[in-house]
Image (cartoon, rainbow, N blue to C red; front, side):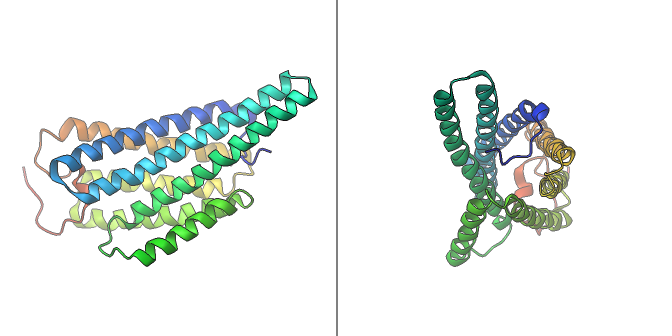
Amino acid sequence: MNLLFTPDWFLGRDILIEIFSFVVLSVFFILCLRNYKLNRNKKTLYLGVGLLFIALAQAAMAATKFAIFYNTSVTSSIGDFIIQTKVVSSVQIIYGISFFLFRMFTLLGLYILYRLPTKKNLVGDFLLAFYFIIISAVLGREFYYLFHATALVLLGLITYNYYLLYKQNRFVNTKILTFAFGLLALSQFLFMLSQLEVVYVIGNLIELVSYLIVLFLIFKILKHGQKTKPNGYNLRYARHHTGKRWRN
């Protein structure tokens, strides 16, 4: 049972997009981890952990789509009904598990990013949010728009939080990250309409652009991080900064 609205001609291509997203977000996590070891800024670490969960979600989605792709190729080439039934059944199990992990890891990562700029750390708030994450992940299989709507709300809040942070610190990197999150929010909105194949493809392309922007940010940080003072060329965009900006 294919619950993704991927056109047959686009299936292999969107697997490559998921793999690319996984690599980019994993590299960003490593960058955040290295930065945390230098300055012990926990918010930088949490930023990396949130992106790592999303990276794992992308890997799970790639596995899901590969299972669908494998399912399609196998059923077209195997004529024996018994063998075909066993293969399709095993693929559906893999599909269900990986798709659930994709939804859960995505929402968990987005929630961590949403909570990142806040100062409160309430256990009850986290448990309540985790409950709704599980509900959205489970029901998202039958009601796909519920998962995308939840992701859209979280990404909208994340984008707004980083926009407010940019108004405080005026760091270029914060602006770039805000724009990337905004594009991800737009892609989730389009995925809610993914019964239209062309809309689904556009959503994937916008998601790809957002991760290309993150990749550009990685190169920018690596290139300038060791050359300039902490004026926005490193990972300090992850924290609140209410004092005076550093000047060259």
